[in-house]
Length: 335
Length: 291
Image (cartoon, rainbow over all chains, first blue to last red; front, side):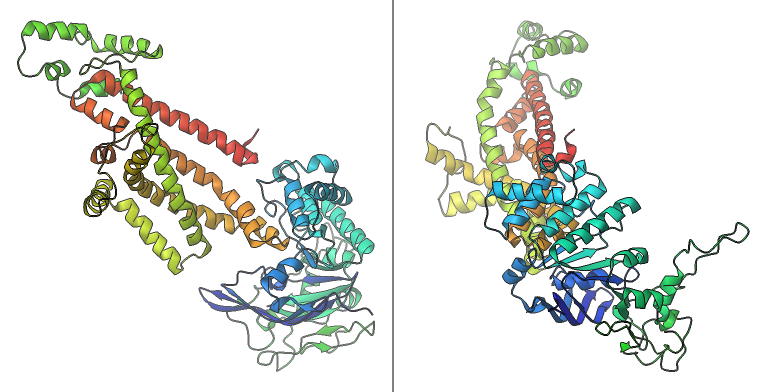
């Protein structure tokens, strides 16, 4: 296996809040290889977005303390000097944000927003950058790319805007693409188009992708590997097949149980209720001492659950290089 | 407006004639200025002439109102634009600094300064400046106005203090607006996109923060400019600045109806024109408003 594009180890993010320090990300470790897609799943508030914003230094320094290491092509993002970090944003890692309605500047043309990103890293003329911008817009499937350069974001639909955001993220051919809920705000058909687009671009360029989502359907379609986050921790990771077919952590099982199953027939016209995971995630200002999922866990199969934090342990694997790991005391009889 | 001017007690003819006059002179003057006719009739004849650009003749001096206003206009324009310049030079950096470091020392100092600027009476500030810079230090003349073409040095020397006084007051108001609109623009999602693109910090700030904070700034600057153009009466009096505010005040004292009406009409026009300009600027700044 070639050297990973991104190697995150023991990433921790602590935010200063009015209610005291909040541990939003607690010791996250994972790698993303070239051409590989890692899906990060979890509920709202599980620390998914914060963990990637922290990588690129996009959290306000006044409130966020980030520790750990995050090697992007061998260079630690977390200890980088600001100017070097600026150079890495773009060519090193491109980012696509959740809401295409707000992630573009409403008062600047699409062309200007693409061109400034290109010219921040490449020493080329405005005209050359504009041609490159038009090529990119064509690549992401925007009709009439040349005309689109002079359009303002409000003149485009949500799906089109997200294509523009993707074009911006790809404009400096990043080694890593981070998609933070990139398709959540879009309707399903557009979502499928965007996913196809990213997969195609990834195949063409060998980009590593971190795909943050809470949509397990998307995960099954796009990811090579899955990382399930809960309470700022990785509670389970492994290949898509391992995690989705043989979930080991009670939380992962809960998430999968909350999916509607079209194969399950309605009995006498009554559609079976969706299973839910009762309760809400723990507040990051006051995490449980033991297993983070303990307060909501329907299993609680071990005496250590309440008081002792379970380590992320290998529980078996279908592929030798990609172990299936889960952080739970209750693995017996599950995998 | 017309009615309000006429409701002010006091007889302009009596004031114009002084203390000793005969009833015949009084009646003759009253008839000549049309004040003996019914108020409604007076209004319509004034309105009809005003539409044609004839604002009447001053009771007091006998000059046409348009010439009186034209004479005062350069002084008022000079002071208004100089003040707004001072105001923006104060407000943009101060408001921006506060917004970049909310609740820092800089922010607190800026807040206190702008509160002082808003609450200190302008005539008091004017008097203090005169005492210090014209009196004790003797650097600047106490007041007056000379046209730029005649004596550029004297023009500037006389402009500095009134412009600073009115500029500080307007600037304090504008500072608060700049702070809040920059703060809001900073929190926008697209600023994060701009940072994630790897743009230099200055470029992020100019194109993605300041550019988006312009809209409220233009609005409040327009309001302040309209206020300054309609004459800052007190400051003009203190610095003997021959502007429109002074003219309006003098015409009130003399019950000089035609001049007062002319001045008020002009102020109303100024507000209309500035609002129009502000609206036009909106469309230039924010493409979403273009249709």
